Amino acid sequence: MLIDIDIVTAIIWAVSFVLVTVTVTGFAGRAGWSAPVALVAVGGVVSFIPGVPGITVEPDLVLYGILPPLLFAAAIRTPLKDILARRDSILVLSVGLVAFTVVAVGFSLWWLVPSVGLAAAFAFGAVVAPTDAVAVTAIAGKLRLPRRVVTVLESESLLNDATALVALNASIAAIVSVLHPWDVVGEFGIAVVGGVAVGFAVGFVVSAIRKRLRAPVLDTSLSLVIPYVAFIPAQLLGGSGVLAVVIAGLFLGQRSPQVQTAEARIAESINWRTIRFLLENAVFLFIGLSLAGILDSVRDSDFGVWQIVGISAVVLGILVVSRFAFVGVTTLLYEYGPGFLRRRAWGWRTSIAVSAAGIRGVVTLAAVFLLPTGTPQRELLQFLAFVVVAGTLLEGLALPAVIRRLKLPPPNAMQERTEKHNLLAEAQTAGLATLDQAVTDADDDAVVTRLRVNAEFLSRAIEQAGPDDAEPSPAAYNRLRRLMIDAEREAVLAARSEGRYQERAVRDVLRSIDAEETALAAHRPKDD
Image 1: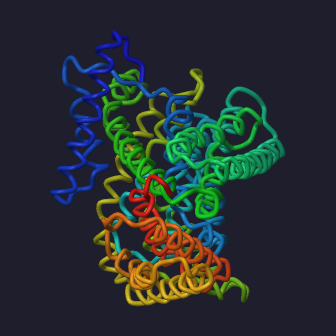
Image 2: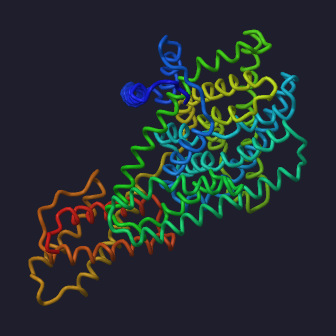
Image 3: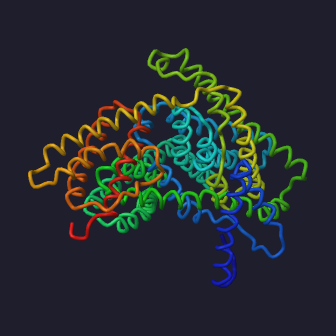
């Protein structure tokens, strides 16, 4: 964002930006509207008000400043086990669909506007290819979709940015020079290997540091810089910064119960939930505020208003149709292909749901401004990118109705509840066994009795939003109950490693255990 004003005025505008974001999001939620669409609409209207500073997209600010924390916030809450279980579907969508979209949109735009040139047309295809993790999560999270569909959609939008940005870099290189196909393959390989390597390296190093941090404030402070520690080195080494952030987030999210204290995990969860809320909603307001500047630039193009409207409609239609076509062909391959594919097939209702969730967002708008100044019809391409973002957001409004018509089975609440209770019972059994081993003759019988009774705390806590406000506990209670909690957590993690429960049940039980451990820490006697 480039605004030539003094620092005090800049702070006032920043505060206003946050207030508008929170207010519009709150009202949209109460009215049952889509918050992303409402924010884009409000931002678009405000951008034409006299006195409102002109807003232009600074690509490096978005790619280096906003995208890493958004991706990290989504990655740490995405179960790695679910991604590995759906890896074939996710890989097909995050790589295959992106490549197909680049070609389909690129050739279509080149046919519509020959003056753009094939390289620039492919660059635009790469710009609009990736779905947006923020928008998809904002919409999918409110729908009672099957867990498999939600995992595929969220994971696709996390990983396809890397593929699209590599394709964009290759297309930009082709605009300014001659590029051979093997260069594209080599660049993609380096991006993937470099991104994965840096992501795992950051994950291992941060895990080792966290094992030695006992203060939640230090752990949380470290957490705030992790996205940038992963993104920037990966980019400098020629790897994919996006992939590095996602890998680091997935790794640390999986390892958090072993390397973080309960207080640190809860603090990190709250902080990242807040950061994610502010950034993801502010991004859509930011998209709307850029509308006036984009329209000003497109006025200098060689096309009339109706020509631009027609081109926009065709490009948006090609983008939507290409997603439906690719997912449809993939569904046919799963149904009628080799046996290993048929065993993992998804139905046509799932195919339609996945196809209808092709929402674009901030990455698309930022990426189009990465096109070099000499790109043919650059102003037109910037306007088309905005149309794609706005159009797919409006398409997302129909997604709830589509899901209802498809009658996809919602998550099995009874099965999830049963798994939670079964896993709680295992955790409680492990805790009580440790209590029997750790109790001594010097321990008060009343304390031991209370510990046994309070083992039921986990069952109550899973229905509660926060930790129980227990009365102050004596030192023996704190000492023995903490030993039980450690055993319970180990039992839950052992069950997860054996794959006997769904990840949602595991995380809910771990959250309940963390809640009690946090309550114990809050009421710990000073001499303990």
